[in-house]
Amino acid sequence: MGGAGPGQYDTAAKRWAGVGPYYAMFPTDFADRVVRHYTKEGDTVLDPFAGRGTSIFSAAVQGRSGIGIEVSPVGWVYTRTKLAPAGKQAVSNRIRELDTQAGRFLREAEAMPEFFHHCYSPRVQQFLLAARKHLDWRGDRVDRTLMALLLVYLHGKRGGALSNQMRQAKSMAPDYAVRWWKDRQLAPPDVDPVDFLTRRLEWRYAKGRPSTAKCWVYLRDSVERLPELKRELREGKFKPVRLLLTSPPYYGVTNYHYDQWLRLWLLGGAPNARRPAGAGDHRDKFENLEKYRRLLVRVFEGASALLDKKSSVYVRTDRRELTRDVTNEILRTTFPGRRIRVKEQPFQRPTQTSLFGDASVKAGEVDFIISGS
Figure 1: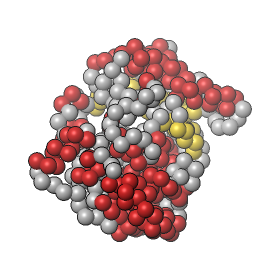
Figure 2: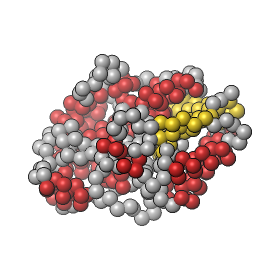
Figure 3: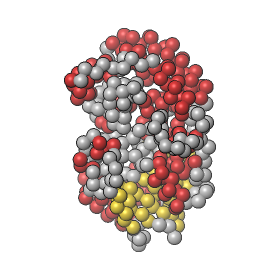
Figure 4: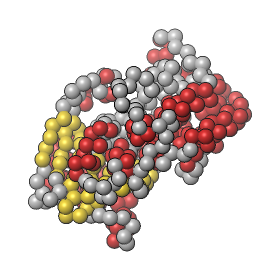
């Protein structure tokens, strides 16, 4: 909210584009350039690994339709919200309604695991429990918008979030976080959640709400949803996709549950970082190479059925050998006879991953590009 350069947040689209800190996310200016270069107004853009919806939002604010599929409810809430946020006054009223209900959660807050008592003040804990219980983020636009803002500020820099000092993009392991806070004698900050959220609400809405083209965003697994979309394309629900713009999960790096366990708790999940039973292969860390390869094959084959003959494909992925080679192989098999241009993207400045000591991803990223005719 502070320290921005001139013009960085001077439109509604710019203020809403960044909703949702997400690990290994597209930079917004990158998505804007790719959408602008490879499509025209009225075209359709597909992202089967939508994350926080950067590519879909970029398409929507530039007059393109977007189709996004995301397996994580955290990313889905971010995407749906930035595409169609509720009115500011309705969200403000909902914040106050929740605050009147928060006091009923005193006993439940006291019974929470140790992590929560070191992470949040009692008042914040009670407010979060009220939000977890009462916000219908799947079905109600006002509730979803408030939930998105809560997810954004659920953890991060002390004073800039509701929590004690934490990373913003990724959740910390509970035991590690508690030890870290104790070693530094860091108590949870005394935050008034109503005042805190209202001030963030004023900033977010200061330029209004973004104007967006029609988009479809699904909280589903792309392996299951893409074949259904093929049938819907034949039925005329949307036009053939002109640009496939995506960044698949990185092999051995992305962990959809562990990285976001605290935000998933607020959406109704368990109050710990353990992987829930029955979560499926695509909601965990990708460490089985054959399962990873099978996922990419099925998703890219499913996506290719939605493209027309003049479509472009733009895939950004990890430069490390396994992820890079598997992606390259599958793209060449899925799009035989198409020229694939490879563009290296070494990290030019400290990134979210390198700043916190994840040396394994310092090599950077690589783009695979198939230009439409």
